[in-house]
Image (cartoon, rainbow, N blue to C red; front, side, top):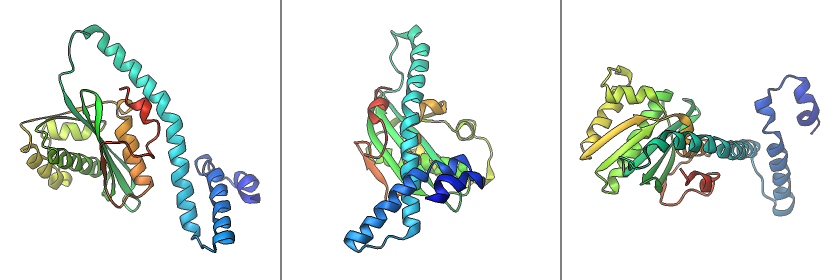
Length: 240
């Protein structure tokens, strides 16, 4: 308590690290109670990891609503001049990946939308050499899950502009050759396949799924028509 509340700042502990402290204190207390009342031992690293994961989820929940409102305003301003036109894509799939380092693993997330209404949520953990590899793996996994639904017409969206350019312009990228070949093979499963870049602020849902999968180190994929309960503010998101 003395270190967390007073000495940490004096010793130069960064602000981002100190944000975890309230959750760390709370889960130390809960571990204490588990030992005292249930004679259950909880490893210190498990307590630390749980505190980190829960703090990340809370901060993400605070950021998402304001970001979404900004995104909704931007989208409204770009569509007011063409109110008589329908969205050209009945089916869309937004994909994203969260990567902090090869050893730490990554998270993959996607959300399929039918006429702008969420239809399928996906989240899973994984490994990737680089952020670009993670983004490519996220697209591959989303395409695989979409084909399982029997959907043959799909427009994919990502905030990774580099990946979009590699695929749409067929740019040469030797380090990503294996992943690009797999993406090309999967495109043959669709009668209509397209992909485009969207700003990160419009890809909040897939981003939240990817970050949640990474922070929780999901060992088993989550694929369901309902949003996972740990995805914050899904009610705000469904308005997009």
